[in-house]
Length: 466
Image (cartoon, rainbow, N blue to C red; front, side, top):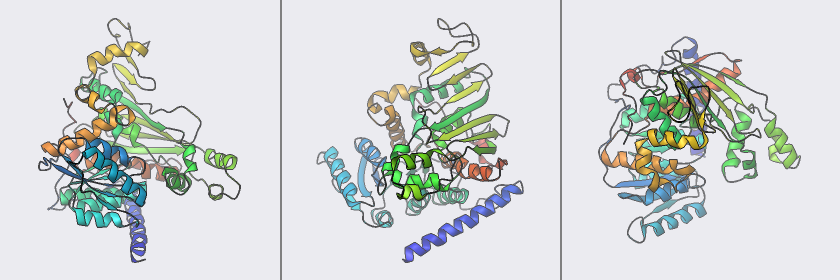
């Protein structure tokens, strides 16, 4: 009960602090209560931690995403799975045993398991002191778990989104700077083949100066409502009911932001406007598929079925972001980047270049697409994809998960800066609360905080890693 009371107090405190941030936004300075970095804090934009030749790994949450992280990283050289925490005993013990099998009696044999209490993850962090922690739990737990992990001396690697409020993001950043521990939001889509190739092409200025991007997460997930007591649907459905905005922006936005080097030297997000459609789909689905007295039919779904937000950057570029996990429609992330000399787009992969591409098109009035795209891959495939595709292709989401996980371990072992810093995770995730506020205020423009406190201007763009 003491922990529960404290949690409620922290939630209320976070809401109050978030309101202060919002108030400062209205005054024209969204960072006014955070614009000074304490003397003992260190900017983490290009931070490289001391080398960890052997990485001791713990994980919180082995329901949906966690098992994939465990299986892949446990097979990498120089890793040791040391602890697993989950609310449910069966999941914690199952995956501990699976990982022991992968170790074949040589590695991963001393895995501590923690379960049965909502706070056992805290005990795990305090007792085991892992080098790094994967956090693969429901959205509301991401920020408090990441903060505590860093406070206990671990690097934190968090599923998307990084946090749900601006104040949570600020606390994550302050904790990372104070403890000098990494906190990376694991945006796996940045490691997809198409996304990596487009990043490579943008760096080579194939489409000229970048002007506009389009990003989305449009994915009909109504079927998850069948998960009522355990699983993603049991908690995610309540998010749809209670919040109205773009709740899941980063899968589409992360790659586009990296194409534009947002938050790194040249440009960063400035303002956002957002609108949502009416909320019809989830209520209709519940009425059609569940009894009238079912708990899903007792919810009032407040979140619009589709949200459309537009970002304007500091130098005037624009990004459209859409989110819809309700409507009957094929999956898409859009993944479009428009430049002065051409356009790169996804779903399906297609490219238009001014002047065309030798042997394929004569000009930009027709798409390079279908089998023709293979010639583009031959010329512009990202060297990271070329290096790692074979070993990662059996991992989740077509191999992007494996490339991401390999890079995390590689950077920790070699003492390299991560491909995605804590400020990028915070900036991309801040679309969530800012869009909610804009929708509530009938599309009023919201200013992005500068989570780097001005350091983005001297942070180098992400290199084309070979």
